[in-house]
Image 1 (cartoon, rainbow, N blue to C red):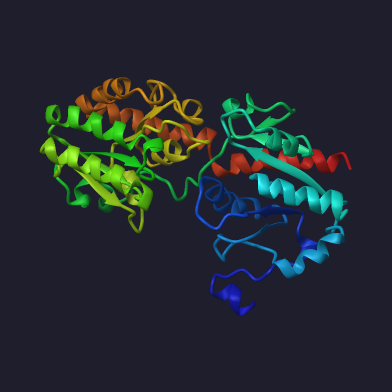
Image 2 (image 1 turned 90 degrees about the horizontal axis):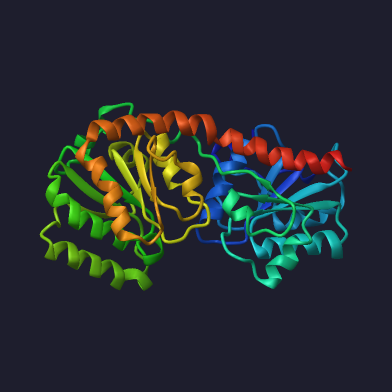
Length: 360
């Protein structure tokens, strides 16, 4: 075994074994990058797949820049490779490889956007060989045939409490129950809506403490500082906490009993799935694919995006009846395992690939 493999670092994959390339042309962590990081190891169990580009863990299978000339040759056992793009830049690169350099390649694009595409993006999408939408809502903005394959999550990583460290008392925070808001601190994520709801509700429900997890970028520091001032003015600094970026977020999904995802807009949004898999009920806006992930009244509740009053009213019954909240949390575990396991997403994507290969 190569030394790099022993250290958990994947050596470059032989190009002849690569059937699918998953490019990532963005260095900073994003939802798209997170999808690649989670999905590729699952796909690699049954498929010759490699990533290409910066910003990805060294543990993922990959090809390097110096291996690109080898893409002129067909992969073993296939007439062509598949280039699976998730951004405009990656679609353009695929078009150049296939149409300009004439490499044996077909192009797949996954679209999570829930808005009308620009003319340039429509031009790129129109040159794909197959298109995947991550939700019915994102598919409604596509003008080409497509297949809906919803994201899944790793239910081995996101799982119900298994030890005392997974329970709320391990947090060392006041109260008997936790309510969490996960994601970067900014207006788009609706952090202010969550804070306003907590300021209104927590005085009536002394058994609960609210936690806000996520990074504050320089451009959003004033936004976060204003929220902290509102919390302090309400006398709730001990019960509405900003945790920032924690080293391991997974136990916190298990410790809180309710997760609130109040985004004003999203691409897809994995937070409700991660929470439900961790045995946590969810109140979410209808941004992104949230409404397609939650079973209303059974695993959580969905409210109109940007409606702070509706959000507060939806959260209140969960704080008033923790036992009922726990029942919905337990239902969420089974719901995610049955419908949103990562293997299910990998199977759906593989079906798109096989559809292309079968036509060759």
